[in-house]
Image (cartoon, rainbow, N blue to C red; front, side):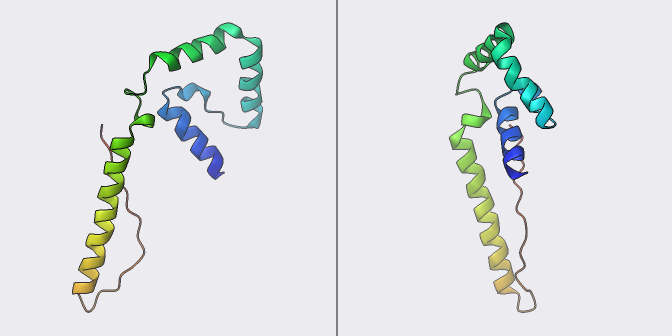
Length: 101
Protein backbone atom coordinates (compact mmCIF):
# COMPACT_ATOMS: atom_id res chain seq x y z
CA UNK A 1 0.00 0.00 0.00
CA UNK A 2 2.82 2.44 0.76
CA UNK A 3 4.32 1.97 -2.72
CA UNK A 4 0.90 2.67 -4.26
CA UNK A 5 0.50 5.88 -2.26
CA UNK A 6 4.02 7.01 -3.14
CA UNK A 7 3.44 6.23 -6.81
CA UNK A 8 0.13 8.11 -6.81
CA UNK A 9 1.76 11.06 -5.08
CA UNK A 10 4.55 11.18 -7.68
CA UNK A 11 2.08 11.00 -10.56
CA UNK A 12 0.03 13.84 -9.06
CA UNK A 13 3.19 15.88 -8.46
CA UNK A 14 4.10 15.36 -12.13
CA UNK A 15 0.70 16.91 -12.96
CA UNK A 16 -0.76 13.82 -14.65
CA UNK A 17 -3.31 12.74 -12.00
CA UNK A 18 -5.47 10.92 -14.55
CA UNK A 19 -2.82 8.17 -14.55
CA UNK A 20 -3.45 7.24 -10.92
CA UNK A 21 -4.97 3.77 -11.12
CA UNK A 22 -7.66 2.83 -8.63
CA UNK A 23 -6.80 -0.87 -8.82
CA UNK A 24 -4.58 -3.39 -10.60
CA UNK A 25 -7.05 -3.86 -13.46
CA UNK A 26 -6.99 -0.15 -14.25
CA UNK A 27 -3.19 -0.11 -13.89
CA UNK A 28 -2.90 -2.93 -16.44
CA UNK A 29 -5.27 -1.05 -18.76
CA UNK A 30 -3.00 2.02 -18.57
CA UNK A 31 0.08 -0.06 -19.34
CA UNK A 32 -1.60 -1.75 -22.31
CA UNK A 33 -2.82 1.62 -23.55
CA UNK A 34 0.76 2.96 -23.40
CA UNK A 35 1.79 0.24 -25.83
CA UNK A 36 -1.28 0.20 -28.09
CA UNK A 37 -2.41 3.84 -28.24
CA UNK A 38 0.62 5.74 -29.50
CA UNK A 39 -1.21 9.08 -29.72
CA UNK A 40 -2.36 8.86 -26.10
CA UNK A 41 1.11 7.84 -24.90
CA UNK A 42 2.84 10.56 -26.93
CA UNK A 43 0.40 13.12 -25.51
CA UNK A 44 1.39 12.11 -21.97
CA UNK A 45 5.10 12.32 -22.87
CA UNK A 46 4.58 15.68 -24.57
CA UNK A 47 2.81 17.07 -21.51
CA UNK A 48 5.65 15.92 -19.28
CA UNK A 49 8.25 17.46 -21.59
CA UNK A 50 6.42 20.81 -21.72
CA UNK A 51 6.46 21.03 -17.94
CA UNK A 52 10.02 21.88 -17.15
CA UNK A 53 11.73 20.67 -14.02
CA UNK A 54 11.62 24.25 -12.77
CA UNK A 55 7.82 24.36 -12.81
CA UNK A 56 6.89 21.05 -11.21
CA UNK A 57 6.88 20.84 -7.39
CA UNK A 58 8.14 17.28 -7.78
CA UNK A 59 11.57 18.62 -8.72
CA UNK A 60 11.63 21.64 -6.37
CA UNK A 61 14.39 20.40 -4.07
CA UNK A 62 14.88 23.81 -2.46
CA UNK A 63 11.24 23.94 -1.33
CA UNK A 64 11.40 20.33 -0.10
CA UNK A 65 14.50 21.06 1.98
CA UNK A 66 12.96 24.26 3.32
CA UNK A 67 9.84 22.38 4.44
CA UNK A 68 11.96 19.64 6.01
CA UNK A 69 13.89 22.27 7.97
CA UNK A 70 10.63 23.83 9.17
CA UNK A 71 9.49 20.42 10.39
CA UNK A 72 12.76 19.69 12.16
CA UNK A 73 12.71 23.09 13.86
CA UNK A 74 9.17 22.37 15.07
CA UNK A 75 10.28 19.04 16.53
CA UNK A 76 13.15 20.82 18.28
CA UNK A 77 10.78 23.53 19.57
CA UNK A 78 8.41 20.95 21.01
CA UNK A 79 11.31 19.10 22.64
CA UNK A 80 12.50 22.34 24.25
CA UNK A 81 9.01 23.11 25.55
CA UNK A 82 8.78 19.65 27.10
CA UNK A 83 12.20 19.98 28.74
CA UNK A 84 11.29 23.36 30.25
CA UNK A 85 8.10 22.04 31.79
CA UNK A 86 8.74 19.53 34.60
CA UNK A 87 5.19 18.22 34.35
CA UNK A 88 5.32 17.78 30.59
CA UNK A 89 6.13 14.49 29.02
CA UNK A 90 7.61 14.65 25.56
CA UNK A 91 5.23 12.67 23.45
CA UNK A 92 5.47 11.33 19.95
CA UNK A 93 3.64 13.51 17.51
CA UNK A 94 3.24 14.06 13.80
CA UNK A 95 4.60 17.23 12.28
CA UNK A 96 2.76 18.31 9.15
CA UNK A 97 4.04 21.18 7.04
CA UNK A 98 1.34 22.70 4.88
CA UNK A 99 2.85 24.09 1.69
CA UNK A 100 0.58 26.58 -0.04
CA UNK A 101 2.78 27.23 -3.08
